[in-house]
Image (cartoon, rainbow, N blue to C red; front, side):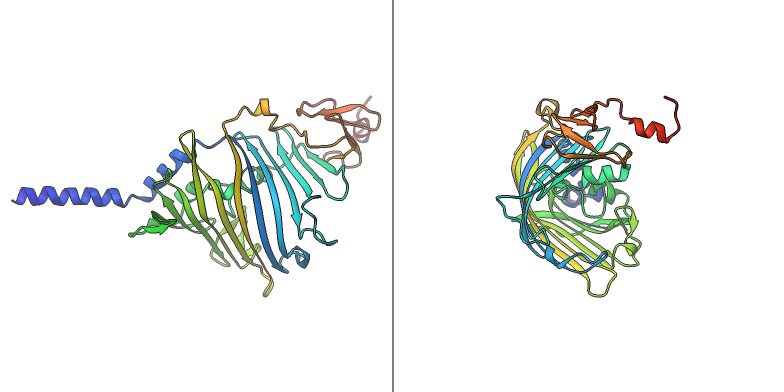
Length: 353
């Protein structure tokens, strides 16, 4: 009888352990699914409701209200392209109509960092930086419009599982909690980038069902590399209402709602937003070179081009190339560099001809 009781007790402990996995076990299961989603093209529709009341730099009140966005994000684990059409309350001159949206795109092709934007000017302007900081590259790679859905939370360019593995403290709650009808495990952690609470869904590849990030003044948190004390007094970010689809054996988030509230150092000044994101198209592990994912083919002929390293020289975009005033090709649209040291720059440096 004693042996039977001991065996039953041992089995109960094993079942209990299986039902209450550790933090590292849950994060490992999450990574097994998420690591298979490293190269993609995602298109999505976003609706954003924003309310601002001052803040650092005193953001203008005209940004208050609703706006919409269409996003196209392409990523291969290194190179990234992010393109967005935007309309709504985005301009001091009044709302931008959906039929004539503003546009911006960012591109890191592994060599150069491109920014292109157009609004009332139908040609727009291109800015190319050949020595962009690693930090800004990471902000583009892991801070785009869809990053929260794939595990990159506000305030950090590291995926949340990496952040939690280096946390000051981390634990799994004793009881599961239901999110969208699923019993989810809940991880609480005090990390370098804020206090995290993450609901893990075991029925969808141990994906994120819900997550929250909180930062407060004087709690020694960091916001994108700077002490949060310099960025504000309090921040609250959450993602919820996630929906999933299984694509090629990988559970992929296709819909979510974000909420963001930040109280700045100025008394009463804050920003608050709610964003609903719905994915309309996903390509997993596409042939990016065949798609031309990292070629700036969204720039019209005649657009002005500014290269950060040569601030006094004006270039022009023509037939997929950057040309100078004499028509000399400085760069082509694949990122292949030509002779990019203008004559003026060599003379300024005192170099011999």
